[in-house]
Length: 316
View (tube, helix red, strand yellow):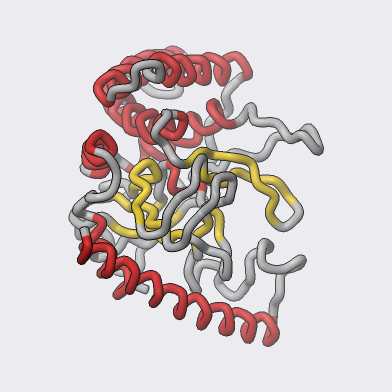
C-alpha cells in the first residue's frame, strides 16, 4: 500500500482539482503545525458540542461522537454555547461566500470559544494562544462541510445494526478527484495524552520525518469520519507530501446521498473482520481465509485506482 500512496502523493501535492479558493483553503490548512496534546484535548470537546445533538429517529438515542480521546465533560449549557457560536460563524459567511469572510468568521469564533474554555477552566491562560490556533484549524475544517461549495457532509449511517456518523455525498462525485474539504492531519509532535483507536493512522514517509516507521498517530479533521468497507470502498487516503496532512481521493463515481467509504487496510482489524462486512465477527481459520480473499480483491481494486490516478495526472 505504501508504494501506491507514494504515487498518489506526487499528484495530491499539486492541488490541481477544484476551484482556486478550494485550493487556497486546502494549502493553508495542510501547512498548519498543531501540537498533539492540544488537539487531543480540543477536538473531542468541539465534536461533542457541534455533533452531539444529532438524534436518532428510530430509537431516540444519540450516536456517540467519534472522539480521538476521552473528552472533558461539557454541561448542556456549555455544549449549546459552543454549538451556537459554531453555527453562527457558519451562517454568517454563507450568503455572499468568500474565503476571506469564512476564515475571518472562524477566527472570531475561535477567539470566543477559547475565552469560554478558559472561563470554564478547561484551558489555562497560558494555553489560550495555542488553543485559539488549534480551534481556528478545527473550525475551518468542520465548518467547511456546511458551506455551499462542499460536496460532502457528515451524516448518520447504519453499520452492523447500529447507528454512527459517516461522510455522505451532497452531490454526485466523479472518480479521480480530490476532496480538499476532507483534509485530515496528524500532530507535528508526540503527545502525552492517551488517544483511542477510533482515529489513528500511520504517517507515511512522505510526511515530515518526525515519527518512527510504523508508529501510529492520532489524526483529526473531517477525513476521520470516513467509515470502512472491504469491498464497497470508493475512496482512499493520500498523504500530502512534506506536510502533516492527508486527503481523500475518490476512486469510483459516488451518487448524491451515498456514503464515502475507505478500506482501512489489512492490518487495521488485527485478525477480525469489521461488523459492516458480516452479521457477526468472523474469527479463526474461516475468518483468515475470508480476510485473505478480501485483501486480494482490495489489491486488484487499488491497482486499478492507481492507473486511473496516473491517467488523470497526465491529462491535467
